[in-house]
Image 1 (spheres, rainbow, N blue to C red):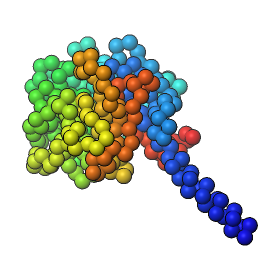
Image 2 (spheres, rainbow, N blue to C red; image 1 turned 60 degrees about the vertical axis):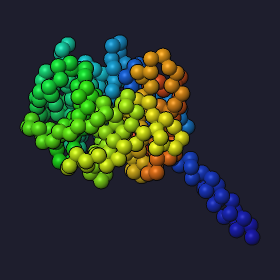
Image 3 (cartoon, rainbow, N blue to C red; image 1 turned 60 degrees about the horizontal axis):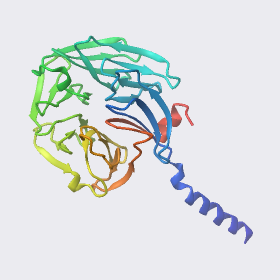
Image 4 (cartoon, rainbow, N blue to C red; image 1 turned 180 degrees about the vertical axis):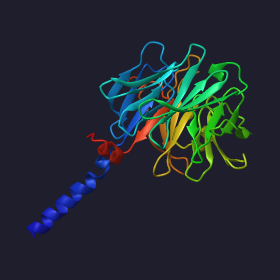
Length: 303
């Protein structure tokens, strides 16, 4: 009887602790935000901050395979360690903007440099250039070109063009493969698990799902379709392992209006908010994020 009692107690404790097992982390950054932060998803607490230098503007952030932090800062891209020591720093000219630094499958990074022409440069994990491609986007002002560029599974680059409201698929050798009208001021892109493209449309307050093969618009999601929050500037969107979406809800371009909406919104397949982060004081504006699940965090040797 006593043994049975203690079995029941242990089972009850383990059941009660099931929610505490999750220790996922999120790296967050954003235009107008002076720091990059590491947020514990379970508690919402900021566990680490990296202060940007004066004039730096971060619109992309990621955790490298080696466990360091990769980010763009408008005039370059850096990798720093958790002690804030610079591993490598790629600097561009005064006429250019390096707005996008995203991971490649080989452990290197893709650097998207706005300019005339725009440059798409692949570097290895030490920051050494391994591939370079120039492409004339037809947009004179570098700041109006793009913010986040990702490599597709087929090796091509997916380039969302803000000012002309289009998305381009460009090959590594500089050939235009596809070009589609989006209709919204597209900030970023995401190749979903099903092969479709998800395109966050910034100040238009929605994201669009498009068939990358045909350009057909599969779905448009606005605040009216979201149960539990509202969209402001829809910046980067991530697809999580459970196929939920994590939306960076940037609070810029509000012209003095106080934005009382979450900076991060996790949506399930039905558009219901299942988690959110609303902490303007400690986190600030969020236009970019990188999700680190517990398994990856522990594998890197962190606790």
